[in-house]
Length: 311
Image (cartoon, rainbow, N blue to C red):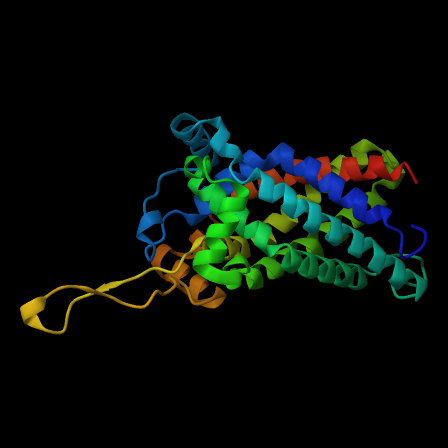
């Protein structure tokens, strides 16, 4: 990998992430819609509009147009240009540092799973926290679909900043970092492990990259979906005003209370979701998550491995 200051893993990671995002974004939109529906605390999303990924895909296309499936694509691309670049570049840089200090490999020359996972966890958490505002913009635009066609990225950013402040752009940063850490801790080490053990059978070829990335995606989907549901709901929520009846019977005019959030944090969101919708609600959007992660990882790792041929 060369010098630990090598810029190529960062650039190649960002480029491969953007390619994968364009190829799988409509699936991500269906996942987001499935995750936010059925909330008892949020009346605007209490209805179960979609029965599953295929039904969501068809209904969004028919009711809002195919273009709605790509609502939020530009903040998603911007997210990958930052998150993907930092995540993969940092991961391989940390592995290089660990190798130089004799921490990554044991006496037999095998990579330590725990050291590998630690590098991936740090890279995922740091990069996702930095890129959180782009994730918030993506989720908001995906949820509203056709309603964001005249808004655009900059106007959406301005509305969040004006009405919710800087904190609004980092809404859900906790579960976002946790999700990214879990995905990275499972996905990257599993991919490297599978690729290494399939080397004798397939060599360092596309078939190896394809199988390794598919196996890695299943593990990360199972581990990350509950956190992803909580993250999506926290990012989509806005401060709302509740109407309260007047204290004087003569003038029974409702008054407006101070704005509040539906969920006070990750734990509160998880508890309310399970209490109101059952434990299975934490796995809403699992199928599109896995279906997307498979092609996403395949596109990413194949692109990344091909770009590596340049050095």
